[in-house]
Length: 362
Image (cartoon, rainbow, N blue to C red; front, side, top):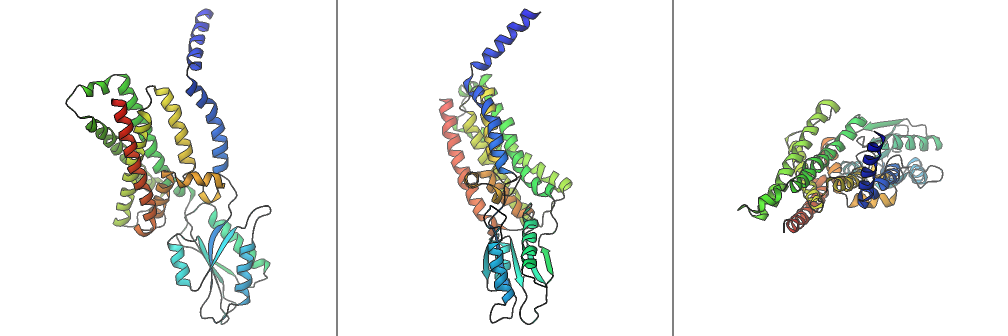
């Protein structure tokens, strides 16, 4: 019995050693988890963009306003950069527009000379995780340091948003990627192993039709997965859709993300003939893309080198767009840059998928 076990052990171990890619990814993945996960979550948040406004009517800024702005700009945790990047606005309407369009995450309204004892008002984008509490704490600390007698009035403009709602939106994008990875990429490799792809080539079906059919099928599956998780988010997490326009925008984002991710996975999977190698590689992409998407933790809390990855990460744009629509009720004007980024990524991924898959067929 022992000899048999040793023989099977030697065979399996030699098989593992004979595949350098799988061996490399097995060793690298835990290190990548440590580096990426450790830096993507729990980093120190600095440079939060906020606004400051002098309550109208006013001729000159009040001493409280001038000292408050200076103190907010200088406020920081020991050993770190300033917590806030402060922009002074000339009116509340302009500051509110900047908040509604995502240019800032909060703004502070200081009372005028006419009623100097009125509350200092703080309007916060409450859809982010951790950041609203940091802003409120920072502003309250500054007022105490200035010995200001004014109470602090806080308005969470999007209401109370729990972490499950914040994270639930990101899980929609994860569902799209996982469905494409497991149902699309692995199925494609299995078809090659079983000779199904070669079977297509002896039929009158054009190669371009095979490619488009593969991408189209994967896109529909990914879209349905994302939509189902979206419904689950509504039922379990309690997120809301604020109208027909918001619902249609969610569907648009899901479709663009699905077709882009599917095309990328087709491009990657077409270069592999072994399911084990493919799974190791795609797990690496899943880690990098999802961890840097902002689904777990605000992107503003990541170190600069990790933020650069978010700039080219399509999942980051998808998460931001969905969060803007679902949690903030924002429209096409705010998510237009995200849609443009997703469109560029999708077109690039489709071209890459077609070229790579066509080369595999030839």
